[in-house]
Image (cartoon, rainbow, N blue to C red; front, side, top):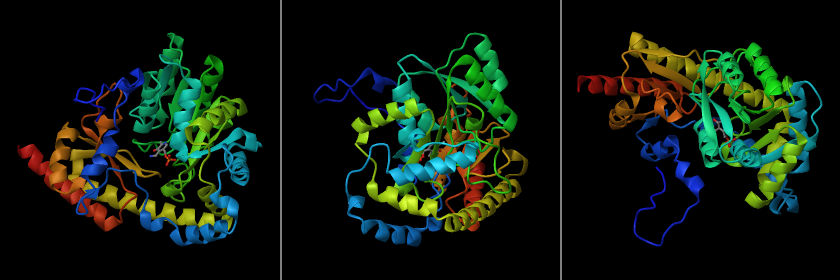
Amino acid sequence: MSVDSSSLGPSLRLSSRMAGVRSSAIRDLLTFTARPEVISLAGGLPAVELVPRGRIAQAARRALGDPHSVQYGETSGWAPLRETVASRESEAVGRRVAPAEVVVTHGSQQALSLLAQVLLDPGDTVVVEEPGYTGALQVFRAAQAAVVPVALDANGMDTAVLEQALREGLRPKVVHTVSNFHNPRGVVLSAQRREHLASLADRYGFWIIEDDPYGELWFDAPPPAPVATHSDRVLRLSSGSKTVAPALRIGWLHGDRRVCEAVELLKQGADLCGSSLTQRIATELLDDRTWLDSHLAAIRGAYSARSHALVGALESVFGERISHTPVFGGMFCWIEFADGCDATSLLARAIEHDVAYVPGGAFGVADAHSHAARLCFATYGGEVLVEGVNRLRQAYDAHIRT
Ligand code: PMP
C-alpha cells in the first residue's frame, strides 16, 4: 500500500519523501489475517498469554499512587528508568554506561526513526541486511537514504562482503544490523563478525545501529557480547516489547551522548515525552531481578518448545520440500521451498486454508527471496503450530496442482 494521490479531492502536495514510502507488507497482511479462524504465523506477535498482566497491574497500581505518573515527563525518559537501562547496558557491554548515554523511546522503532532523522541527509548511504527488517527499510526510505543491501548467511551479515564494498569506495553513514535472532532470518551475528564489523566502523567512520530486541530470547546459550562492546560507534537499540509487553511501548537507545542529545531534541518535537505511567511500570519490572529472571526463563522455555514443535512439524509434514534455518532463539523461523515454489502466490492459497505467513519478498531489497517465507512461532502453542503446518501443506498441495 502507498498513498494514492490520483483520486479526486484537494491536491495532496505530500512531501517528496513520501514517494519512497511503502506500507509494510506485514502490517497490511495483519488486516487479512484478523479473522479468528486464521492461524497467523505472519505477525511478529509475542505470546499474549505470557505477558505478565497481573504483575503489570500490580506495578500500575503502585505507579498510580504517584500523581506524577499521570503528568508529562522528561523527553529523554523518566530518570529512574534511564538509570535502570544504563545499568543493564553496563552489564551487557562490560563498561560503565551513564544515563546521559540513554534515551527512552516509544518502542525501539521510535529510536530507529529518530536516529535516521538525526544522522541522515537525503541521498546518504545506509547498509542494511539482505533480507532485512522491514521496519528499518521503511525508516531509511522515508529518510530518502540510498539503501545498499549486504547479504546475510548462517552467521549473520557477511562482513567480508561489506569490507570488499568499502574497499571499492562504498561510504555508508550508517550500517543497520539485527545482531541477535535476526528478523526475519533467525540467525545470530558471530562473535568474530561482531569484532570485524566494529573495526570497519572505526576504520571507515560509519555508525552501526545494533538493533537488538530479541537478544534475551535465547534458548540454550546467550548470544555473543554486543557489537557495542567493540566500538564507540555503535548505537544500540533494545526494547521491553518482547520481554515484558509491546503495549507498554518502552524501548531505548544507548550510545554516544551527543547523538542521544540530538535524538532528544528531535523527540521534543515528535512526542514531547513518553508515557510517564508505562515508564514507571517498566522500571518496577526491570528492577525486580528475581521476578524478571524467572519470567524470562518462562518465555525462553515456552518459545524453545514452540520452535521445536514448528520445526518438527515442518520436517515431518514437508520433508525435503522445505529447508529451514536452525532456530536458537527469538521468534522466527525462515523457510525455503526446495522446488522454488513462489511464496507470494502460495500465500493467497494459504489464506484460503486459514493459515498465513510473510513471504520472503517482503524483506528483500535486491533479492526477491521469492521461494522463502518467515514463520513466527511465538504466538501460539505447539498444537496450533502443528495444525498451521498441516494447513500450509494442504495449501501447498493445492497450489502445485494448479
Ligand atoms: N527492531 C526489530 C528488528 C524488530 O523486529 C522490531 C519489532 N518487530 C523493532 C525493532 C521494534 O519494536 P518495538 O518498537 O516494539 O520496540
